[in-house]
Image (cartoon, rainbow, N blue to C red; front, side, top):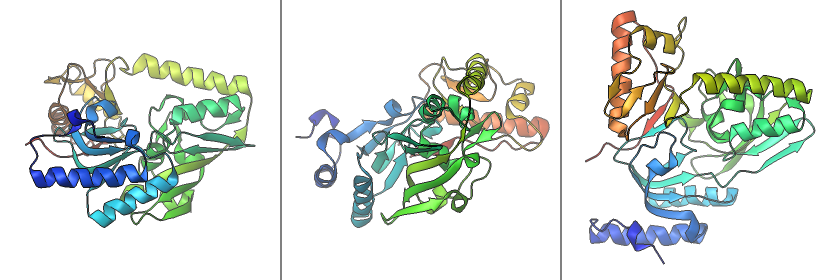
Length: 321
């Protein structure tokens, strides 16, 4: 039975019928507990921003992921993959069609010097698993809040390390719902980029190749990086993490700081006083306010230093009506 308070009663009759039709097909693929209707996406993003998704689906197997992709193609319904929302802004108008979240695919396995982690596992947790097995190479990831899938999507990195350094291979689903195994070099990994978004891949799992190390030495590095992160980053407020890529020859945070923008606020969104490279949701910001502040920072830095700040954070969804 569909929970009535999840349905938007302002929809026309045809739309309601189509919703029920799609809902029935989705729960036939997975389960009623894994399909949410008219779901607030602000509950699923680190920024605590975003409107509603028509359908939010959380598959539990690779086969379910494939079937949902095939269903979206067959029904010609919009389809969006949502990671754990750590490097993402969803607009206030929300997302139409099917939104897939892979947070139930979290298995992590170790074999000798190799770790295989499913897409929905947090990359932080994978780095901790490496520590428990005395494996070195993922120390840099101990402070990255994103999922494994998101880490591959943007070749996540910090403190001199990046996914590209340790990724061996990945299993993905393509736009047609086919499952593929790809080597790391087939992903065109570069500074905060990959070909995953352009090719429409959905990451199911990643295999990381690490090296044997000393537990205490690995832990010392991770403790140091954790201290640096906690002491310098505004973790007390919701945010999307580092907003901008590092421009060649500069540091984004330093440019923003030197532009006297720390503390600049539009609505509930604020350039962090603790780290200028972060924009925080200080007081119930809307996505529009957050995005307006990003644009304001970009324009100000361009005017003062003639440097273009390129967004690292992704913006998806629709503007409000």
